[in-house]
Image (cartoon, rainbow, N blue to C red; front, side, top):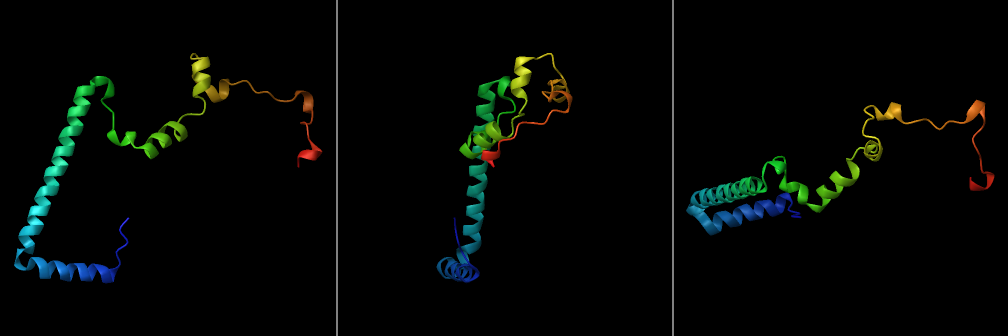
Length: 116
């Protein structure tokens, strides 16, 4: 987002010293105070939102609503065998309970010469 090299950083520091001069420490203190207030307001808003949603959403995280996080969570972190649990909820150990569909008696699998 900000592509600032070492030379640009030095120029910015020199400009800050020239512009603010002896007021630089108080300006930095005011900036820090403002950032703490913003962080406090964001934390309060988050806690109020979680309190308003109720106990069902106690582990709700606002960052989950970011589109990248939402897609990653719902498309890539799901258990691929969830659809089998929905079909047969009595099955606890799914990888061993799914019936194998092997070929009978050492039969060779089909092979398509034109496909390769």
